[in-house]
Image (cartoon, rainbow, N blue to C red; front, side, top):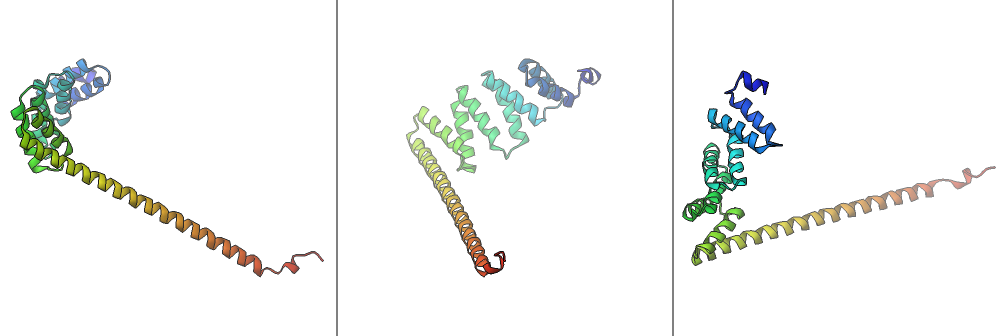
Length: 193
């Protein structure tokens, strides 16, 4: 805090104070993060924390600009697009949410979270054709995921089985070698005279 009195407009100091307070006191952290954002609105950590704060407070309409800013800062990160769409959906702006989800789906058709939200929106909006399309895509991706997991489990079991077989063979070889070693020993030389 003393540093803050020396440089009260330093966004890095304000963000650090916000981070320290976020562990114990959201309202104080919020004040520091807002001030940090005012002086430097391009700090992704600050922007995402403020967006999440508003989501936790169920003030989704206030969270939208922060997630949009995060989206601008990281345009290839779909997490921010999904957060903007989620906020629109929760405020009742279904068409805006739908457009964002559809855009994400065009660029990332394998994104399960996006497809689940599209299925829910299509259900809520009574979009039967779209619902069928999105639900079919979602089922296909989930089936592929399950098949891949099963394939990985089978590969792990095969690898474990091969490793165990290798250990058993090594133990047999060792036992045979020890037995051969004993058979070559002249026992008569070991007996006391």
